[in-house]
Image (spheres, rainbow, N blue to C red):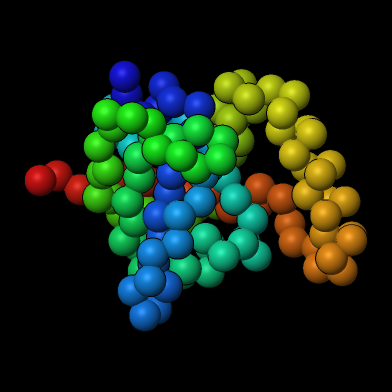
Length: 132
């Protein structure tokens, strides 16, 4: 099964000191070689990607538990906007449907409670596996 066919992938980004930080994200196919997802420009993922494009990805469940028998892929990631973000949005909404509305509401409520609102899905990320 291709990574784009999975419901979630575990995205591992890296802090400036090299410490890995893993987060489950939705995943959609962009083309044969790349996958994408959306995130907030204020998220930790976006902040870490601003200083390094190095990532690793692996199929997982919603809680970030990796899928048994799956392999971790080393990859590069780049943040996108404009038409590329629009294409990712289209694919995410087509694949996840009503879930996108629920997560937006929950994110807004959580931001209000914490007193720290961040934009919802305003940045796209395209992930390209590194050839071995």
